[in-house]
Amino acid sequence: MDKYHVDKSFAHFLNGSSLLLELLMKRKLDPLNITWQQLAVLMACSDRDRSCTITEIAELLVVDLPSATRLVDRLCKKGFLSRERSEEDRRSVNCAITSEGRKIIKRAAGIRKQVLSSASAGLNSQEQKTLEKLLRKLMSHLELEKGKSEQ
Image (cartoon, rainbow, N blue to C red; front, side, top):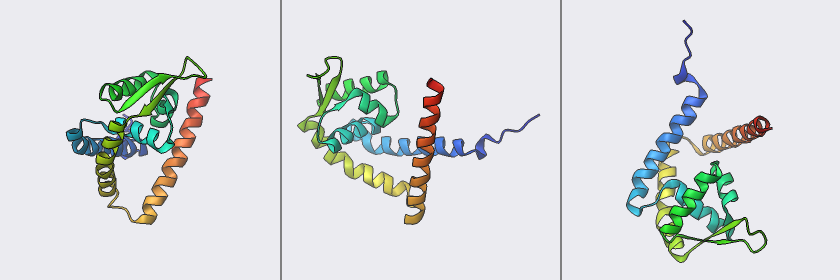
């Protein structure tokens, strides 16, 4: 019988690292009643210093549109985002961060930084840069492959 050595594949390590990082982030963010993905949406809108479309949010988080819409809906219910139809394209929805959203970012940004710093503490700065470079390269390649498979 063939042996697949699933626990030795790079996919195993990528997925496991992602799940563990998400678990660590969840434990720290739970008291603020916000998820890591919700925080990423707020930070993305804040970084752009303008409203974001749901399509932009979906692309940033690498999720489908229905998942991005659910994230936005939850953030709107919490009062962290507002949404309105685009004046240019009535089919498009713009999401803007509220003052409450900005407050939660200020509280959560330090937690995020602490978790990411702790998670990468086993790597020196050069290893961290190399890992980020390789992950960017892999993600770019996978996005191209995804595009090919959709054609």
